[in-house]
Amino acid sequence: MILVNWQGAGTVDPACGTSQRGGAMRAIDIGSRRVIQADASMTVTEAAGIMRRHQAGCLVVTREERGRALPVGIVTDRDLVMRGIAAHIDPATTALEYMMSAPLLRCHPEASIDEIVETLQQHGVRRLPLVDAAGTLVGIVSTDDVLVALAALSDRINQTLNVQSTLDRAYL
Image 1 (tube, rainbow, N blue to C red):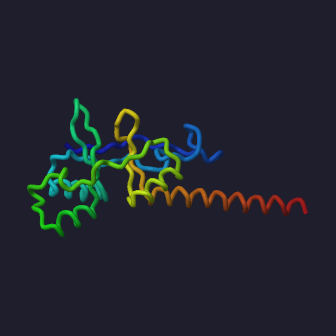
Image 2: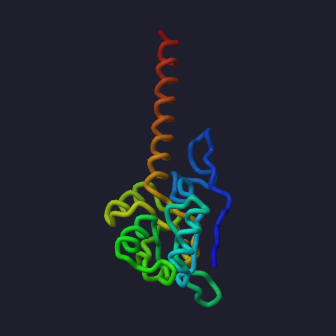
Image 3: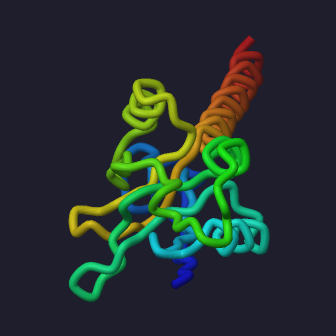
């Protein structure tokens, strides 16, 4: 089974810089809701084809339980090389469950940037699937997403400083 989640992303209110849902930038606001998923029984060859077709660097591996696809692991393009090609496995017959990183390291959608960075750093990973309290995969956040969010925040601070210096000159 291949499932691509593509839900509406959170939006940022430029007037106050916070999510329109309130509060500071959260994982769900800065990450992507586009998540490529594949069943654990899918072969490595099939998974590589899906990653190529969707230009994705990773797949979240799911397993059907009680009629729901629950996230159980993750496979990255690096995993395909290091655990697959370099280990001389047969990609046509090897299931993703033998290639995936598990148990799945996950993040709550409401996590702050600081919590995301701490988790990424502690575990030495670059991507964190976002899983809600019900166990549903709702997105994914990466180091690149964090860097983009911080750069945008830095740019906004710079703009504020430039406006402030113009206002200060008006009072001279």
